Length: 332
Ligand code: COA
Ligand code: ZN
Image (cartoon, rainbow, N blue to C red; front, side, top):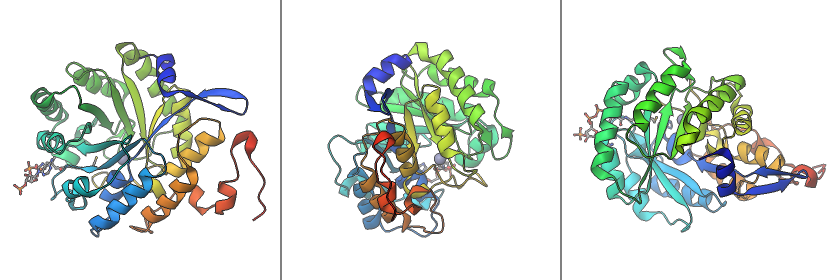
């Protein structure tokens, strides 16, 4: 799909006198955010947070992962969460899976959006899912051919697409090689490109997304940016991706997150920071920032010591005092 078609699908918004394409925000705090929290978060609290996030108008959310409970004990209650949570009909709920068993369990549980994670770098893939990159790709191929259904979408999530905690900067050619292999059997759709460590610089984000869209856009592939804020570049990187034509962004409320198998990675870019930045620029997210901030305050309680993001720390009246041309000075 071309950038223009994509813009037409997602609509556009009026802000600062200009028309700008809207964005889709995918909330990942219940998966990326919670997976890094060591003490088990009670299922009731997880459900309350997921429901509060959904009430902010989010249209997409990763609500957990079907992974080995030995690898990530925090995700062990995903089936119970799916059975008990009450979500708006329009919300696209997704889960992350690392292997065939996860894909099959997710389909069995009725999930329609499945995010399959593979790392570009061999060492992170081994550390994360105990497979070579090629083994992960072959397993995805067999698993997808086994469950393929019109109403189920697989988003191929490419981790360490910019930087690997063990191998350093990732070559663009390695990203292409993974995507060429996956797109040989997956239908064109959305692909998640992750800055797992948060170490990508803004020029790198811009150049990789520009190349990816040139190479795969004509096949009908679109991309989502999954950013981490370890080096305080999360929002800047998202805006660079937006300038390069990306319209789908992962974020985690309260800036929680991090891969337990990627040393040195900290939280995702805070969803509320992304929403503030986009709305202030006149880019519609469809999200009520006040409701999102309240949900982020609740999400923060699971691990206050890991929470991050800026907008939650601004006096609430100021943060909510209008965007763009409608911005009002609030002295409080
Ligand atoms: N969902 C739930 N349980 C799963 C599972 C899944 N997707 N995959 C495996 N299991 C269970 C197995 O049934 C087995 O249980 P048992 O010991 O009670 O028999 C156990 O987990 C180990 O299974 P095995 O196939 O031997 O896996 P492994 O130990 O080689 O680990 C992965 C491989 C991929 C399952 C594991 O590394 C994993 O879950 N990684 C996810 C990492 C992650 O989420 N990272 C953060 C996001 S990027
Ligand atoms: Zn992540």
